[in-house]
Length: 179
DNA sequence: AAATCAGTCAACCGCCTAGTA
DNA sequence: ATACTAGGCGGTTGACTGATT
Image (tube, rainbow, N blue to C red; front, side, top):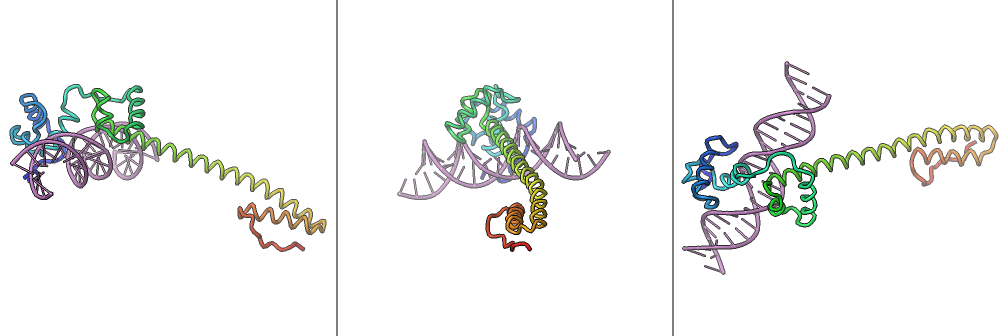
């Protein structure tokens, strides 16, 4: 049975050579025969993946070009997470590469969106703080002024405004008429 | 210089489908 | 119709590496 005592993890140079030699001699496919005939202590899936994602000739390494990125975005819109189909349209790129690239970009986008949201809310908070600071100063002065003038109603209404600034509410603040 | 963090990429896992006995 | 096997795929993990603190 596959999986008993089968080697896992990174492939060695020797294993790569054995796999390459086998494929060159017998061609792709027949993956179930590979471990036995190539004398590899690996499962068939691992052999297939190693070949497709790393050893296969013409695999392109390095950064994705702008054209490739653009194509990935358009194809993803069209096909969703069908990485093998998308990779099929990108010569030299594997489904694994495309998938990894997409995930990385997605993470970056999320991080940048989160930062934008944070900045926006910080802006809002700062504006509110600024508004409160200036408003409260003005209102306190008005309350004091009208209290001194014995203008109870005006002083009361400015107290209400103060309260609303601090509690950010328009419900009954419970402030009683000042004396 | 050491510790921590973040990004990248190879590899594994589990599921699905098709073919076959 | 059912069970089994192989191939294929997408999601996820973990090792590695370079950057930052």
